[in-house]
Image: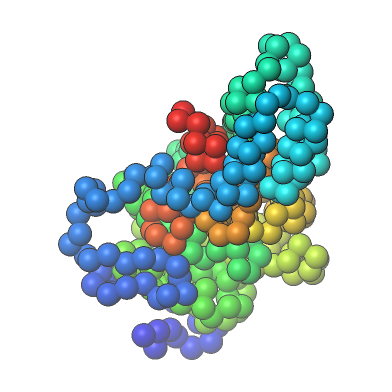
Length: 348
């Protein structure tokens, strides 16, 4: 399928035009649909329903034991201690847990809360308050092309997220170009190329070589073709691999040479299943490439959901998008009220 890739170190411009591919590669995590399927099928669940379904495990981990707590007869020290343990097990982290408990105790005293049921509603309200500062939608400015650099460790869902983001921006009427800057992992290049074939999106790629050169060529091509948005993939790196992290920093510097105002957004893709390790990833990548926003994926897996609370308290960065499934529409802008409602079923 990818036999048209040119010889090593020769940059290629893949104007993929096949819109009749039967399906995305399984590795890409996309769920295909018939080419003539209407975009608004009546039987398709709403985003809120998909979010609740995706966070079912989080709800089981956090909400079920919390609900049991709040059926007790009274609010006492034992209830609050048990609640503390539950929040820590939900990956909220020590800082966020202490803040929530302190605020709960203050509310109980100030508002004379006596019912555990009322305490549950207050907890949901406080969690929403904590998460709302992270709710900053990604706004595409007048820069053209608008360059979005995307980083993350291998396995976080970075390449799949790029494909979904491209589809999201297309739905907003934006033209998109992809830069296959992960030249060290052939599957990443193939995934982007397959997505380009399926959706008529240009992919700038090469079989191997300098990822910074690929991204530079992509920006030049986007400028020549009057493209709105460039999504630049980068090779997956562990934050402990300092020498390799420097390569990503080099990509950022090359972007600035191609466009002194860029990159206009630097997204870090995080796997929600890694829990508190997400904090270290945010800090390490931010130090190297100045992260401006987060994409949190795989919240439908074994993730416990509280990691966003930990991020809010320890390394606050805007959460631009969250992912709760493998479907092409299962990556959407983060909204704090929707998120908390999906966990606690508050009905907000």
